[in-house]
Amino acid sequence: MRPILQREYEDLAEEYVRLVKKHFGSRLWSICFFGSAVRGEATSESDLDTLVVADGLPRDIGSRFRETNPIHSNLRQTEAYRKFRSLQRHGTVSDIFLTRREASEHPPILLDMADHGVLAFDRDSFLEGILESVRRKLRELGARKVLTKKGYYWVLKPDAKPTEVVEI
Image 1 (cartoon, rainbow, N blue to C red):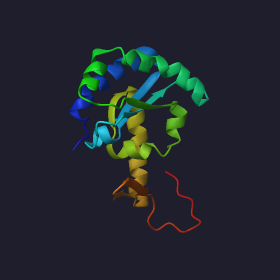
Image 2 (cartoon, one colour):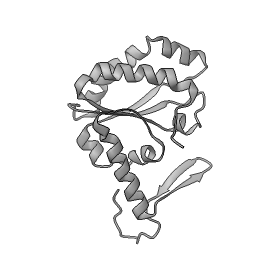
Image 3 (cartoon, one colour):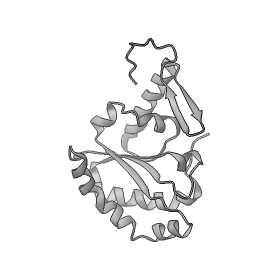
Image 4 (cartoon, rainbow, N blue to C red):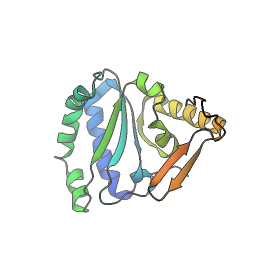
C-alpha cells in the first residue's frame, strides 16, 4: 500500500508545496514528506517532516535557513496553517534542504523516505530514482527496521563483521 499523509496534514502540505515551488522555481527538483504524519503515527505535537531537493543552495546551514525562512513566514500567514492550528496541532513543517549532489550521496535520512516517503513533487523522477537505489541496496544487505518502545532503528547488514564498513 502506498503511504499517504494523515488527513490533518493534507492542506498544510499542499500549501507548503505551493510556497516551495514559488520560492525555488526552476531550481526545485523534489519534495518528499516522511515521518510520523506519513506513517499514521502523528500526535498533536508532530511536525510534518519534509525533504526538499533544490539547486543553488548555500553551503552552510545558517545561510540555508536564512534563504528558506520566508517559506515558513509565508506559510504561517495562510488559511491552511490557521486551520491546522485550529485542530490543536502544535507542530509545523520540519524541513531538510539538500542539493541534488547531496541527495545522490545517500544521506541516512533517506532510509526513512525509502521506507515510507510520499513524493509531492519530483521533477524527472529524480528522488524516486535515488530512493529506489536505496531500497535495492537495503534488500541486497538484508537490512531490517527494528521497532522499539521509543521508535525504531535500522540494522543495515545483520551479518556485518565488527570492522566492516556498510554503505547505502
